[in-house]
Length: 521
Image (tube, rainbow, N blue to C red):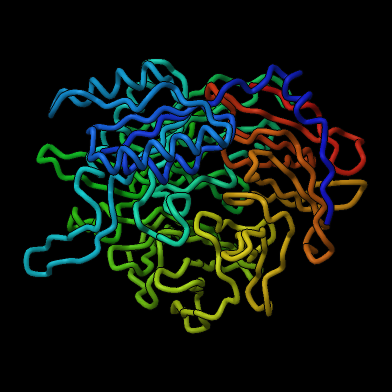
């Protein structure tokens, strides 16, 4: 397995450059910003906004974290900004701070924290974090959403769970996961990019195959969170899944799973359809619902899975004829937020959940009797935030918990297969059916710890033959994605500063993984 550095920097500069990347860290008080600062890559412009001044020890810890970020190559946008005011004054003051920073991305806390205990008698959950954390996160989401609507410029938001896995830090604790497969090729060969933002999902599409792109347009839907899952149906159409937060008049928060589908590249997806949630009868439980995973079986039945309040898996099925089953709890081993569902080679569906109380995964599959069976023996432990469906049926991609190396596993195999390049972060995207030198290949795309976007390839269905990786360009401001058209044309894209995209296309007739210079669109 080798890496071939490309002339990526010059190519990006030729394409107009990516520009500065600005991050706002918005938290309740200074100590909350320390783990989030550690996530910022070299070159990022970083501002810290706190709703309160905090204690002296916390301010000292934040000063050290700011100095460390500066040593890594981050540029600090002034000192710590403390929002002045109380109650109703907080939101407009926070919005003014974000207007001044004009961030590409906001890092904040968890608006819907996970309970640590539950009082059956009162029906009240208790949490391991201060109530101010959820308040700060909700204010940050609302301010970023308002800023995006004012400017028309997409703003990405990462909401981090506190203490979800103290061994791995804040990078392992995202409430709404980064999508791996957000780039799509339509039947007509035109590409569509679906990007989660503060104001919900934004899409952009090519006006003609290989040509110019539309401006960002929202997939309408109030309260949609900044996370996204995109999966294909048996006909190859993209289906979108996310969560929606609705604040009620009494201050309670309802969170439900929503779904939409795009049928034509030039037309917006159908309106969001609510699938509810497994604990919808009790809003305090329902707001903790995990992010959805979904897959279609060969008959066209859609299975949607979530982690429920009790930390087991629940699912709902939309049958091929349009019927919708109730939510059903599967029980069994406790799982963390992260699930991935895959369509299997035999036409069924399986779901994998990262174990909550151990290093490993739990697999659920339909047994011969039509009931869901549990398998706790898959021989791998994924790093949080990295589970993704593979390109081949039944394959699961992930990063190894110990080594961070990208790996693939299929049910029945004795061990996972390493794919090389252990310096990356986040999920790995995969597409099959790419013709290279006359042979079918699977192409992988991933972001690196050093900020690079890299692509790799192996013969289709044969990852054991080895993966050849190469750097595509130096900066990846989010998880890269890849798509291949029905004519075998390959494109790779990554988010760019200013709400745009960097897109590179495989050069027709080029040997191996030869790409055009990335275009800023």
